[in-house]
Image 1 (spheres, helix red, strand yellow):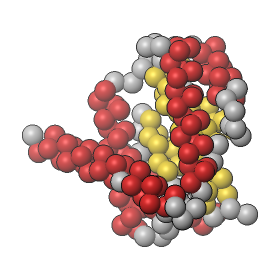
Image 2 (spheres, one colour):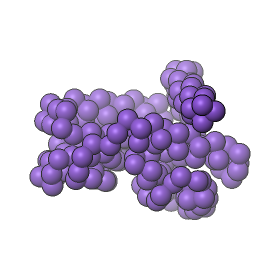
Image 3 (tube, one colour):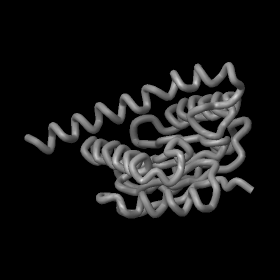
Image 4 (cartoon, one colour):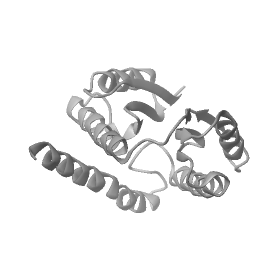
Length: 189
C-alpha cells in the first residue's frame, strides 16, 4: 500500500512539474527567449508543431497496433515506443522526415508488442526520479535537459555543453531503475 501511495504522489508531482512549463513559456514569450530551456519561443512552438503533426500522421498510418512517442527538441526528433514490424519502424521514420522543418531523426522504436500500462507508469516515475536528481545534484540547470523514458531506457535531449551532457548522463546512469541511458544531445559549439 505504501509503495502505491508513493507512486501516486510521485506521479502527481511529476504532472505538476510539467504543468508549469506552459506558464513559464507564456511569460517568457514576451521577452523573446524561453526561460524553461535554451530554445527561443519560436523554436519551442516549432517543436510543438512538429510533435502535433507527427502524432497525427503516425496515428493515421498505424492506429492502435503501434505505441509511438514523438519528442522534438530544436527540430531533432526522437521516436520511442513499439511497432509491430521492421517495415513499420522504417515507415515511421520516413513519415517524420517528411514533416517540414525536421532536421534529424533518432529512431529508437522497438519491434515488438506494446508495453503495458504498468511499464509506462514506471517510465513516468523514472523520468521524475532523474529530473529530481538533476535538481538535487545542481550541476547544471535541470531544465536544460529533457528526459524521455521508454521501457526503463532514459533518453536525454537538449542543447548543452559537453560538461552538462557528461553530468546529465552520469546522474541518469546512477538513478536506480534506469537500465540504459541514450544521449540525443545537440552540443553548444
